[in-house]
Amino acid sequence: MVSAGYCHTVFLRNDGCAVACGNDEFGQCAIPPLDVGISYTQVSAGCYHTVLLRSDGTATACGGGRYDFGQCDILPNLEQGISCTQVSAGEDHTVLLRSDGNAVAFGGNDCRQCNIPLLEIGMSYTQVSAGAYHTVLLRSDGSAVACGNDEFGQCAMPPLDVGISYVQVSAGGSHTVLLRSDGMVVACGLNDDRQCNIPPLDEGVWYTQVSAGGESTVLLRSDGTAVACGPNFGRLSEVPPLDEGISYVQVSAGRFHAVLLRSDGSAVAYGSNSKGQRDIPCLEPGNYYVGDVLLGGDLALQLHFIYEEAATTLTCLNLAGETVLQLNVCGCDLAWDTHKRIARDLNVKLQSLRVVLPDGRLLAQICVANPVATVADLTNSSPR
Image (cartoon, rainbow, N blue to C red; front, side, top):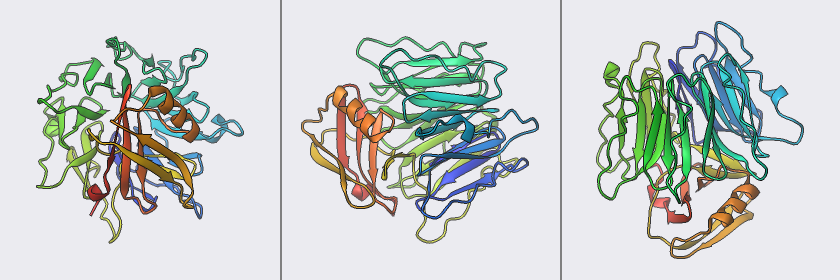
């Protein structure tokens, strides 16, 4: 996956290593070395720090800033027997999603961005997103809550229509962007640069991923294209065109730049390059950049495309070749309750499951749009 921060960018490769480029004034690009047999599964770039999730369920961080708010003090925030399933780095705070469905935040808390709302009985968090001075969290019932700076209404989650849920949230500088289960996107907060003016969709196309930056928003569409809204500084609203046969698979908006992963395993960036944040590291033969990777045991799950009108039996294997999950999906229907059980058993986020081969190539996906799931064999869409 790729994560664009203030003036640096962090990438995840198919070999489980992470690399970074851009401002390294505080060591935010000095990725910690890995122990033997351990890989990185998720990366998140903040303002002056970077947080990384490892395959053993632990998290690590590098960097800091001019002032140490404890945003890199990760280990004391996990209890024994609890693992980390997602990380998110903000301006000077860090948010972790835990395997028990709770979330913990630490670091700068001057705007109460670390005051995670209490969960109701039977509820859990499924995704977290740290913005500049606010935090947005997705709950297991498909609703979203927020804490921290609400000066511009960035914590005022838009109400949902009946039967619609949120499937992804992204907290930016002073705005929040939310992806709905019907493929529509809504935004709230500061809109002085039109960062909340979500572009209309063409017929038959929907949004599949959102990323809120400092003052811009980048959105991935179901046809593999990406669009953006926000200021014209650095042409942040102008997404680079694609070569024929290539699609975008992930987007990430930073403070003054944005980075996008392509289906061929490469990455492109646009916007400011004042600190080298667009100088994407060269890839060695056999390596490529991968999309968002989640982990459930030894099962790697990668975010990628959404396809419709497919029915199949999906078998998920761990790296030892053992079957850890098998789903019979007929007519694209999969009960939401069943999916929640699967997500709980695999210890992953709820909105999507992706299956990748041990070498990082995408094999298949289940994408949930409550209460319908679609499954597709994406072997031919693997990076070449």
